[in-house]
Amino acid sequence: MDGERLTQHEILGFFQLLVVGGQETTTNLITNAMLCLFDNSDQLARLKKQPELLPSAIEETLRYRSPFQWLMRTPRQPIELHGQNLAPGELILAMVGSANRDSKQFADADRFDIGRNPNPHIAFGHGIHSCLGAALSRMEAKIAVADLLERFPKIERATDEPWEPRNALHVHGPTRLPVRY
Image 1 (cartoon, one colour):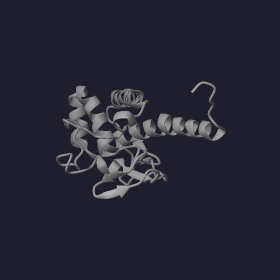
Image 2 (tube, helix red, strand yellow; image 1 turned 90 degrees about the vertical axis):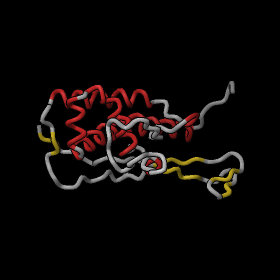
Image 3 (spheres, helix red, strand yellow; image 1 turned 45 degrees about the vertical axis):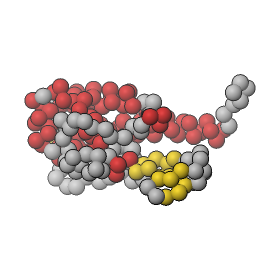
Image 4 (tube, one colour; image 1 turned 120 degrees about the vertical axis):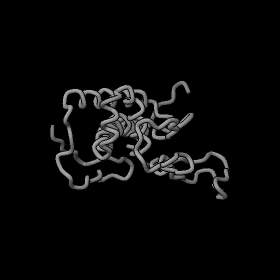
């Protein structure tokens, strides 16, 4: 309303949201896309032959290896969710990464398929809870992945060692991704 100002705590929370949403998720989306392509050489070869599948490859990365793994929600009114009664103010932990691998929603859910259609993942939320920066993140990932594959057509992982995940609960991606080109 007019005349209301954000508190210092709300301002700090907003900037934390911008840092995570504007940098962490996009960085992890790009590294996760490359990691998925390296780990699925058939899909990398398919993308090189059909570069028009790049938008679909980005969507499949968002589903298969969601950069943002979970989020909290708080109901404003009593609700029942899968037989559980939730009161207003109770915290709900929505597991985005798990939902995007749900075999009831996705055929062959544990397979990375750059041609998957439809692909109704919720990596960027849904409805009124959709991420405002989703379009920008998708665009940045498309540009970065296309540029990497064009400039370095023989790009590959520099090691066969298992990748090490970030030391974070909410975001998902490798701590580092050494490549050879």
